[in-house]
Length: 130
Image (cartoon, rainbow, N blue to C red; front, side, top):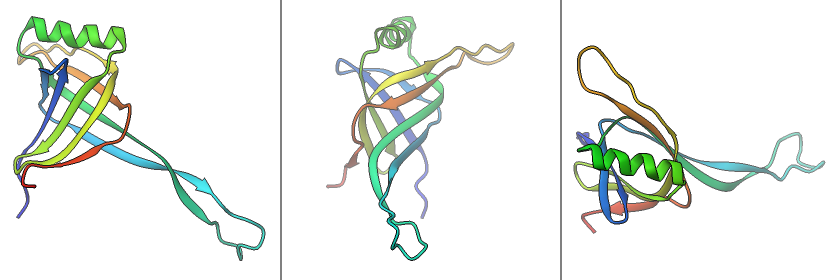
């Protein structure tokens, strides 16, 4: 059965400063080319350094103070703690910085605060059941 729902929470100084309406989390490893002349015509590759990023197109900040905290963290290049969870409690924890930040306004509906996060270390697997 598929797990419904996913949550992204950003924390600054131990306090939640925003939750994502949706999130796209991506992690990848770099490549190290180990190919030599006697590789029989095939490349030989290994995994290099890892990195992760996340796009949060609809960040919800509860009030002006929390939105200001996010903007201040962006301008100061401060680190934030990010939590990515499914409704069943499985997910990842990581430390990140805000790479891009924006504001989107529409005639109808709320104001959106899209941000892009850049991981500053490893993603750590989180499982509430263990």
